[in-house]
Image (cartoon, rainbow, N blue to C red; front, side):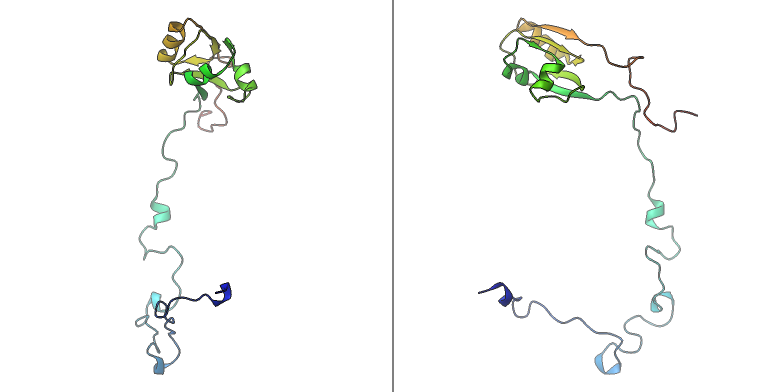
Amino acid sequence: MRVDELKPAPGSTKNRKRVGRGIGGKGGKTAGRGTKGQYARNTVARGFEGGQMPLKQRVPKMKGFNNPFRIEYQGINLDVLDGLTESEVTPGTLAGHGLAHKGALIKVLARGELSRAVRVTAHGFSKAAEAAIVAAGGSVTKLPLPYKSGRPPASGNQFMNR
């Protein structure tokens, strides 16, 4: 069997009903559109709902809230730190290993376990991660955020300058 010989199973398809082709073919005259009125005249605008406010206008816009001062951290877990060979881990070494983006704010999270002492320098630590690092004999150094006021500037928010 070839591709050009494929066709649907017998009886699975049927021809569409051709309306508006005279009274001999069941579907002449009004062609199933009833008598008169807007819907018989093929003039209904796309999305028109009979004068009711259309769905595309009823749906609310601009819902929710995007905090312009959100600080976006890149999470690094303890099992990732344990897999590294270095005894001192900084954002630069993480970027060098391809585990974090260059210049990203790093937050150490507590998934996994740490089996050796590691000196970790990052922008943030979860309480559990900090406790696990100290319990393994390591140390924690928190870097300051790279913003003047301690939080990022409002980036392009038109509502902030009122």
